[in-house]
Length: 154
Image 1 (cartoon, helix red, strand yellow):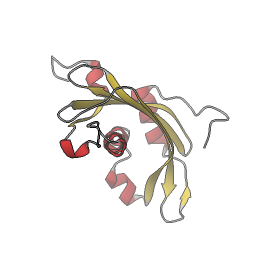
Image 2: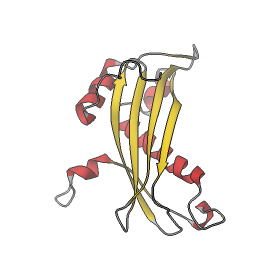
Image 3: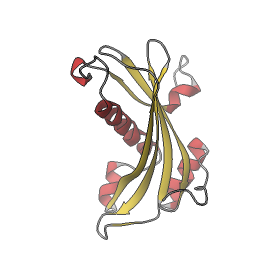
Image 4: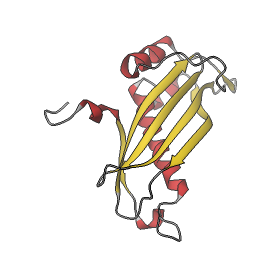
C-alpha cells in the first residue's frame, strides 16, 4: 500500500467512468450498466480470495449468481467517475454472500448498493460443490466473512 493509500483502498474492486452510451433516455446511467460494473467488481473480489480464472479452468469450476438485490440511491450521469468497494459477508460450503457499494468519485455519495448470493459449481457435473478450504480461509481472513446464516436462501 502506498503512503497515501488508506486501508479503505483495499476494498476497491472497480474504478470506471460513465460514458454517454451508458445513459438512458433521461440522461441517467441505465440499470444494465450498474449490473455490468458490479459484475466486474465481483471478479476482482473473487480473485483476491483465490477464485481466479486459472483456478476455475484447472478445476472445472464455475460461479453462478442465484440472488441479487440492488438499491439505487443516487443517479449517475455521463462523465461521472465511479468507485466500487466490496466485501464478503458470508462464506460456507458452496455459498458466498457479498456486497458492493458504488460511489460517485466526485461527490463521494453512494449511488447504488448490491448484495449477491453466489454458488460454487462443478462445471462437469453441472452441480454445486463446496469451496476449497483455502478459499474459505482467505475470505474469512481478509473480510471477516462468517459462516452462512442458518435459514438464509441458498
